Amino acid sequence: MLLALVATALVAIALLSEELLPRIEEMWSRHRAGRQMAPVMPYDPGRERRAEARARSLLRSCVNEEEWAMYRDLGFIRVWGSQSDGPVDADSTGGAAYAYLIYPHRAIVAYLAQTHRLLNEYCVAFPDETRPYGSARLPDSDDVLAKWMALTGDEQRLISTANMHLPGRQLDPAKVKRDLWRLSQWERARMRDAAQRSPTSTPLDTSN
Amino acid sequence: MKPGHGEVLIAEGDVELAEDEQRLVEEFRRQLDGGLWAAVPTLDAAGRRQAHMVKTFDDVPRDADRVIFFPRAAGGR
Image (cartoon, each protein chain N blue to C red):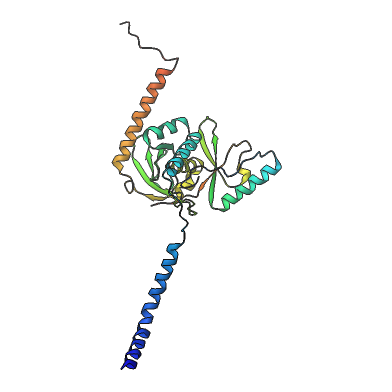
C-alpha cells in the first residue's frame, strides 16, 4: 500500500515538475534580484528647467533682438522666406513675400506676409537617438533655435526634409491666424515705442 | 544641444594654435560623423543675425567664436 502511494507521488511530481520548475526558478531569480541594489538614476525635477534656461540663453545669443523679444512675448519666431518663388513643394507664391512661424515642438507654418494666407505646415523634428538623458526631445528653446538655424542657414534643405501638410494638420489655422494678428499688434506697439524713444521724434503740437 | 541638458561645451581652443586647431578639427569630424548638423551664427551685410550651415571645418569662418551642433532634422508627424 505504502509502496503504491510513494510510486503515485513520484509520478505526480515528475508530471508536475515541467510546470513547476520554471516557476520555482523565476521565483528564485526574483528573490535574488530583490536583494541586489539596482542602479537607479535619481530623478532631478530641476533638470528640465535648467536645460530650458540654458537653451533660452543660447537662443537669445544667436537670434536677432526683435526675434528674441517676439519669442519671449508671443511664444514663436517669424523667419522670412528667401526663395524667390516660395517654399519648396508649395504652390508658387508668384514672388510674393512669405515667412515661417516657428513654434517649439510644433510644425513650421509658412504663410503669405501680405494676406496672411496659410501656405503649408512643415513637420520637422530634431531627435537625438542617443537619448543621453532618457528623452529624444530637445528643450523647447533649443528646438526653436535648431529650426531657426536650419531655416536661415539652408531653408531649402530643411523644407525638403520636413513632411509637408496642408494647414490645419497639427496647428489650428484659427490659432495661427490669431497669432499673426497678435504679431502685427505687437509690431505696431514696438514701432510706437521706438518712435517715442527716438530723440528725433517731434512731440505733438498742443498749442491749438 | 542635448536633450535634457541644453547647451554643452564640447571643445574650445584657438584656431591660430596648430595643436588646438587639430583638436577642434577632430572634434568637429566626430560630431558630424555622429550624425549632427553644424551651424555658425553670423551677421549678414545688413547686420542681421542668421546661421551658416557648415559641412567641413574649412567652411567655418576663421573668426567664428563658436560652432553649434544639433541633431539632424527629420520629417516629423
